[in-house]
Image (cartoon, rainbow, N blue to C red):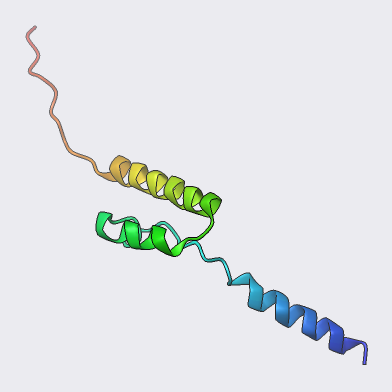
Length: 77
C-alpha cells in the first residue's frame, strides 16, 4: 500500500515535466514570419525574454556556421 503514493508522485512529476509552454528556439520557431506567432503563445514576460535570447543565440550560431571562402590578396614580393 505504500507504493501507491510513490506511483502517483512519479506519474504527476512525469506529466508536469513536459508542461513548459516555451517553444524551443529552432530555425522554424525563430523564422521572422513565425517569430510573432511563437511570441504570442508565451504568456510570461520572463519566458518571452528567454525565448528571444534563445533565438538571438540561435541566429548568431547560424551566422557563424555560414562560411564563405575569401582568397587572400595577391602577394607582391
